[in-house]
Image (tube, rainbow over the protein chains, first blue to last red):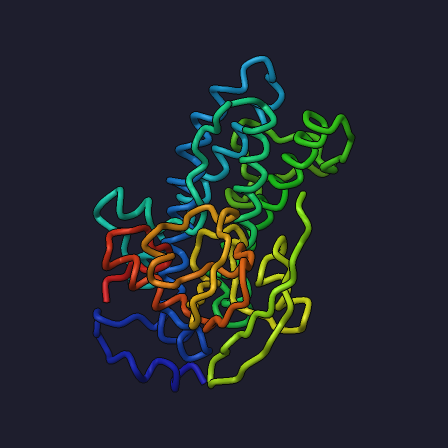
Length: 205
Length: 119
């Protein structure tokens, strides 16, 4: 089986990758996957990490919200760092132009809302995380059972995006509706702990 | 909120299959199709990523105010984002137009998520 799969890559050939051909052979549309990873990388870096930097600045007086926004911000940066090597491994590359990269994002830029109230910022954060979940589960679906390396990465990121959504549901319900909808989570470690995407210990006392 | 009207939306699916659904004026076309058992492409569900793109085949009108990014050029060319499109009239829509809409956007230097490649 392994011999058959590597036949398309000739001995010493550096223009092709067995690591790509084996997943293509299993049915992954590699070119589409690269486009999706670039779009998701752009969403993590340009749509969220960059703009969450601004959003957290405007949560003054809500230090708890600010801390949690900071966790989400830094974890999105961790996602970006995790995705980029996989894009290049698959034979893709990032656009050598930041505006072009920004415009590839599959989720909108989380620009500071007007007015920048806590409710408006939390709503934006919530919807940004929801877009991320939808984008990552798509990659999980594309790669499940075919490309274990991308699947493992995508599922780690998805774990954190799902937690982010739960955080912002809890905070928005409290701030906007005066309701308690628990996220079920209690703490992270250091800011930007990213237990799944940094393969760190996660909270399970 | 005003009274919701009901419009007939005919979906022209790949391979020429046609399915009709009734969609309220306050309802998104994608949701109505889904509820009728027609699963159309979609990803962000926010009117941004272009995965759900369709194209009008009649002179019908949609309300795209729920879409996060929809340009006058899109409207003039008949492209619609079904996940956030509310009908304002009876419609005939060709579905599965994401590739065409991305190409259209690229040609006009408008954001076209999921289109960048070195090919």
